[in-house]
Image 1 (cartoon, rainbow, N blue to C red):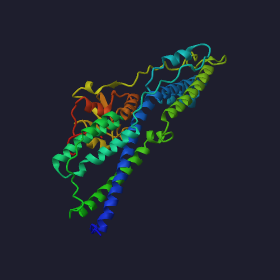
Image 2 (cartoon, rainbow, N blue to C red; image 1 turned 135 degrees about the vertical axis):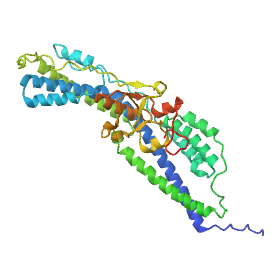
Image 3 (cartoon, one colour; image 1 turned 45 degrees about the vertical axis):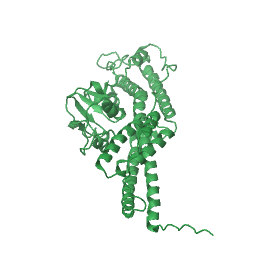
Image 4 (cartoon, one colour; image 1 turned 135 degrees about the horizontal axis):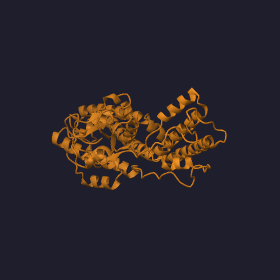
Length: 394
């Protein structure tokens, strides 16, 4: 009868901590992938929402103003005049409305051209399951907090900058290339049988617990943004949601245009008290321009920059000398903006496009930097971080 190998003794406390750390690490990595994916989705949904529906919202606002002005011209009532002035103030100065006004000026009402579909939505960045899997594995293997060595920590941080950028663009091929490139280095974690292992496990569990809370908080914040709430209405089919919104706006615009043509073409319309011809709106049509946009390479070195990202994104990497006002605070802090031409930045260009739209409406000279900080970094333009560490786009 052969002697059996002795059973290796395992500290029950250490075994429990090993399992808890492994579970916490899995939970954090899963949450981190979800939050990164949500951030990418919201940024791109905001950009597409602006491109697809911005002209339709402006078209409807313009029609609302024209209808209110036509009513005021008929009645001369002070209340109607006030409502007309308020409606005109709400008009967004974005799309070119030449076609709209041409149709309004026609004698007979032909309605909205139903054969003209809304503009096609550009391709959306949406990291797939394989990209998520590779991203999760790379974060697990290469996270800077897995080492205490300064040089190794820096190497890992630099590597993860490239990983995050590839994931933000949903580039599975680039992530696969990065996975192949990564070479494992000695881990900072003590060996399983090391006397230092137990203390390391406790510290690691505390760190993971804090990261889970931080990640969950960021997820809630993203979900509660206006675009996050809109995207939540159809998270699996945002394209269809945009199509439905476009159809509703087109239907409202058709109804308002019909009402406007009725008001302008009625046989019993009175002449305005000031002698003007009420066949025409009181104000001449406003000519709208597309949102001002430029690429990162074309931004002057001495330009006034406005960064509208959140604090954590700013801390990770920003342009030295830029003014930082998160998008949710722009309206309240508009007085802090300089009078000169502003170049507005966010992560990929979606949030900044909304801010430029608002600033242009307020009569400010503002330009959206296409591609945001990712494009800025890709163009080799300088960045700094709040911590003094090498800057990266979060």
